Length: 62
Image 1 (tube, helix red, strand yellow):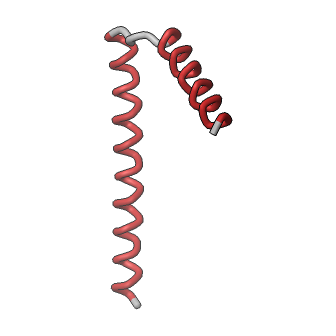
Image 2 (image 1 turned 60 degrees about the horizontal axis):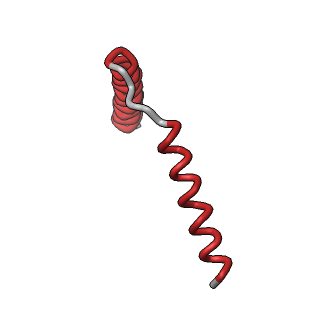
């Protein structure tokens, strides 16, 4: 039980350290992250669409 309390205290200290270091991004940084994330989602969607189309074409010729 003592080990559990120590690990919980360590976890809380780590969380406090992260919260002290973290900051709210400015508008430019947020927009850059949003653009990169959006582009990544679109790329993954296009790849999935292409794989689906290829799979349908292969099944149709078989």
